[in-house]
Image (tube, rainbow, N blue to C red):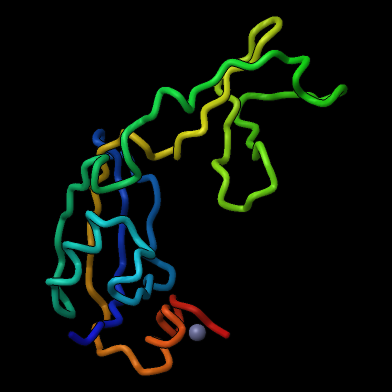
Length: 157
Ligand SMILES: [Zn+2]
């Protein structure tokens, strides 16, 4: 089966209708189908659409960024941080040097301890996308070999 390159505009809203992120007014996102560059719940929907189609897509946590894993919410003693570290809410850090290690965010600061959360910020959330397809074409041999879409909104070498 051939793979398509799909371009689309998106607006992401939370369940209360607040806009979290949008590509409208900027370059549409360009993806190579089947490469997992976007969350599965969104990819599944857009691959069946054609240029000009608009669709509202509701993505559940299971098809999005996953459920919140309580084991990734950890309380650590302030003394475990390097001396002189000034912690603020929202600070993010990695626990080791592996670039794929989860990013932890400081979510609570107590007298002696700090609570950090290694879940994706969108984990556990229902996501609501407004999608408009702007481009759809067969991937070139070069794109297939590279595993990503080429061009504006995709990968530019
Ligand atoms: Zn490439």
